[in-house]
Amino acid sequence: MSLLPDSYLVYPQRHKGPDHGFYPASPVRTRAPITLPGGAKLGLWVVVPLEYFPLNPSGLPFKAPGSMQTPYPDLRHYTTRDYGNRVGAYRLLKLFDRLGLRATFAVQGAVADRYPALVKDVLADGHNICAHGWDNDSLHHSGLSAEAEQGYIAMTLGAIENAAGKRPDGWLSPARAEGFATPARLADAGISWFADWAHDELPTRFQTGKGELAALPLSNELDDWQILITHSRPEHEWVSQVTDAANWLSDEAVRFNSPRLLTLTVRPYVSGLPYRVKTLGESLKGVLDRADCATVTPTDLMGALSA
Image 1 (cartoon, helix red, strand yellow):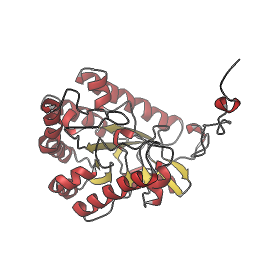
Image 2 (cartoon, helix red, strand yellow):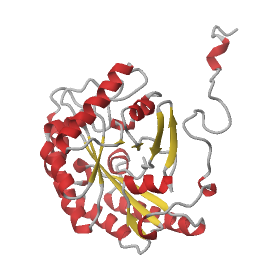
Image 3 (tube, rainbow, N blue to C red):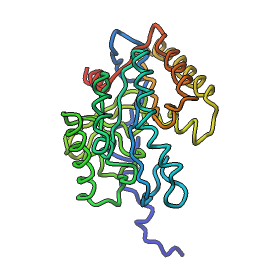
Image 4 (cartoon, rainbow, N blue to C red):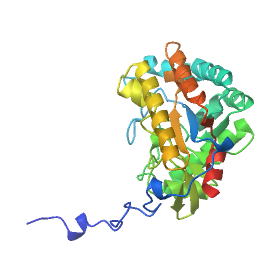
């Protein structure tokens, strides 16, 4: 005899399609074609997180990927992360300028507060920015009170506005962690798009109790931390994976008569290292040299969604 109440196994969102009300079931092949700049069949969206890792993280409710691992003070990991904002980011800016690539830099509030010159340099090079939460020890989850989460969001947007001179309209959560109420609180704070959910390869409409967001696809799999650090794969394999993805998506774009998106996340303290940046450049150039490819921005993707 079970001691659990009958309600224990009852989930009110259990129904056909996804187990939530944010978006409906919608197979990608049944959707109306989107349009990308210049009629491109393959859109490349590169996202660069500018992150701050506290030297003494609480690790609650969990440690974000890249957080300190050894007892305080974990100077080995802390200084490697700090290297990303001091050196690696500028190496990426130089690479992007050489390739003619415009990326989205996901800026944490603590970075904007501590390193406002970096934010200004990113904007001066023609890149766009979005908010990336306060820091990697201030994670969003369902255990947060409304006041705490709204405080994180407001503090982040305010710090970036102070550094950039403009309030961001996009969001990527630290560690891509959310609570069930996070999307609605983002919409309520004036955010138009976010990139936490990896449920698609095209932009989708995302309904919250406070209005609609554009959910922009950002792959978890084609992420330099995931491949090079978590899976410990050699750099040349990442080039092959990106190339394979570009070939497959381009073929799908032709078969289904609708463009496809290739999304990459590159971190300055991972891909900005001197023994990796050359490989990153080869990977990006291989995609950009394709006649059917164009780089895209969140503005392009939201425009494609509303067309």
